[in-house]
Each structure stands twice: as C-alpha cells, then as structure tokens.
Image 1 (cartoon, rainbow, N blue to C red):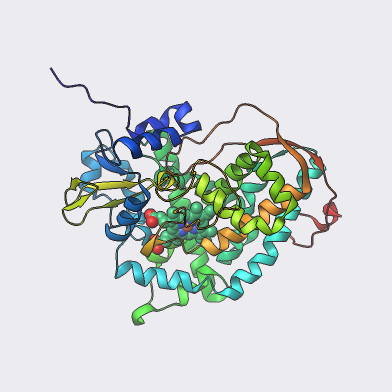
Image 2: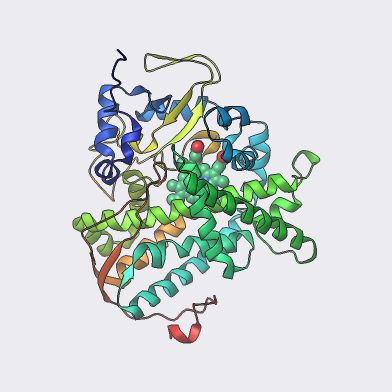
Length: 426
Ligand code: HEM
C-alpha cells in the first residue's frame, strides 16, 4: 500500500482560494513546524525563516533553468523557447556572467535618469487620478496600478510611450511563467506568442537605435561593452524582457495590495494622511507586509546543511521571502502593520547579488502613487466585498480593486500621452 503523503504544508495549497486570500497562516505553520521543509509535490525544499532565506539568497546558485531534456521528461517541452530566453537573463545566472550583465543594466539607472523619471511619475499619477475623478469611480488596479509602471517602463527604456499597453500585456503573460509551478497548456501557448512578439519588438527597437538613438535602457545595453565586448542582440533582448517585467507586475501589485492593506487598517491610513513624511517608511512596511514577490528559487551547488536538514547538490530550494518578512525572530509583532516601523530591513527586494536594482525606482513610484491616491481620493473605501487574487503563486496581486471616494479637485497636468489629453485634464 502506498503511504499517503501529507499535503497540509505544501506550497501547492496556495492554489486554494482561502489560502490565496491569506497565505500567512500557511507560512507561519511552515516556519513554526518545519522551517526547512521538503515539499513532496514541488520536489523542492521550502525555506521560511528570515535568516535561512538570507542564507539561500546569499549562498545558493541562481543558475536554475531546466535543460531541454529535463523539460521534455517533465512533459513541459513546449516551454523550451521561453527557457532559452530565461537562460540569458541575469536573474537566472551566477557570476561572472551575472556580474557582466548586471553592471550594464544598473549603469542605465543613472541618478539623472531616475530624477527625470521622478518628475514624470508625479504627472503620470496625477493624470491617471484625474481620469478616475472625472469618471467618479475607480478600479485602483486597472486605472492606476497597471498603467503607471507600464508608462514609466516605456520611458525608462526609451520606447514610444504609446506602446505601454503592449508592454503591460506581455508583462502579464511572461509573469505567468515566472510565478507559477504549474503550467496550463492554453496559457503556455499564449505566453509563447507573447515571447515571440516581445522578441521581435525589442529586436526592432535595438536596430532603430542605430539611426534614431533615444536615451534609455535599450540604448545603454546596445552601446555598452563590458570587458571590451558588446552584448549580443539575444542577450539584450532577454534582459530587456526581464527588466520590463521586473518593473511592472511587482509595482502594480505593490500599489494594489498596498491600498487594500491601508483600507483594512484605517488607523494607519489616517496616520499617513496626517503625516505625509511617513511615505518612505510606509512603502517599506507595505512591501514587508504584502510582498509583491512572495518567493524565489535557487539550487544547491554543493551538499549543504540548512536548519538541520541535509540539502543535496542540485536540489531546488524555494526561499519564501514573504514568510521571512513575517518572522517574529526578525520583526517585532510581525503581523501588525506599522507604518512607523524602524529597523525594517525586509526581503521584498531580495538580498545579495540579485538584490533588485530597480528598487530606487520602485520606491519612488510607490511613494508618489500612495501619496497622491490617499490625498486626492478622499474617504476612500472598498466598493466590493469580493476580492480576487491572481492565480500566480509567486507574484502576489489583486485582479481588481474597485473603490468609492469623494473626489478631490482635478489638478493640471502637462505630461502628454495619447489618452492623457492636456485639455481634458484642465
Ligand atoms: C515593488 C517593486 C519591486 C519588487 C518588490 C521587486 C522585487 C525583486 C526581487 C525580490 C528581486 C530578486 C529576485 C531573486 O533574487 O530571485 C528582484 C530582482 C530584479 N528586479 Fe525587481 N522588484 C521591483 C521593482 C523592479 C523595477 C522597477 C525594476 C526595473 C526597473 C526591477 C528589475 C529587476 C531586475 C532586472 C532584477 C534581477 C536582478 C539580478 O538578477 O541581479 N524590479 N526584484
């Protein structure tokens, strides 16, 4: 008789709607009863304590994409073209390859570039909020949290801002692969199509740089020659795709989940309304409390003991960032939202070599968006009791967040973008 496997602690339970709505009970159970847990369904170790998550992100290998043979053996051969792109992305590589790619991308985030983006972000957010005020209602996700980072991403790359809707669509599709353990065949077909579209889009953008150079990430990647050699076109495309997605779904989810969290904690919302200087620490606390990236993965490059468990070379380890961020060994009263929290070195942007290099931009986007939303949409409240979370297990975010509010005044905006007509806003 086969022995029955205990499913109660498997991360697969994140697919259950009640667990998806609040995964923190499951994380607590894991942390308290088996902090380095062998998940029999995922064939991977699941690590939930803050200190162990740090160790995994510091010491384990990021080189974790599957070979074509492994994919075929798992019946996932259709994912091969996507995995070929991932193999060239810095997030899935170790030094020295990682260091070379990252240095070029990080160089494109010069303080002057981020300063230009910052002044635009305020205008973009104000324009989007004006539209909500004119309409008299809003879905925070669709109307603000989704378009804002897509527009910022287009600017950051030096791409036509009118393309932001395509960037958003591709980003949603690719995020399916990044954040899920299970891959449904219909979705795989859609993601493959998006990857082909993105690849030809970025190839054309790279080639345009030769005759029509525009400041931004595409240009920076095309003209940089780390170690005296230029990146190949395929490397540039793969890392444009990574950065484009890294910058969008995460920021969308920070704003959507963050506003929901504030609505569920009216005392904290009031604190922020009374004292906008709390915005930087509020963003850090919202990132800790509802981390947009819930977990990431690594591979053991040697046999290693972690938390008393023997992890074998080649075994996968899932580092549950969101569980580490609620670890009472690291944070006082971790399930309490405290926008004034000090010593808040959370894991939401990762740790060590792969620490998110978009963090300064994400922080600015968060501060501007939360500041403007709470000040301008007065008496904000939820307009629906039913909240649906994306099925994506790794990237935690709401499908929609309908709200009611008392409209504040429309503010003038000069930022020009297709639907953000200056006349309409005045
Ligand atoms: C709230 C917003 C964001 C969150 C929560 C977030 C979170 C993260 C995390 C946890 C990692 C590390 C993953 C790992 O170690 O496996 C990461 C890496 C990365 N992020 Fe972000 N991110 C955000 C915004 C951004 C933005 C705005 C950009 C682009 C401008 C970006 C681009 C990247 C890239 C390219 C990497 C890979 C870095 C590397 O491998 O060295 N992210 N991010």
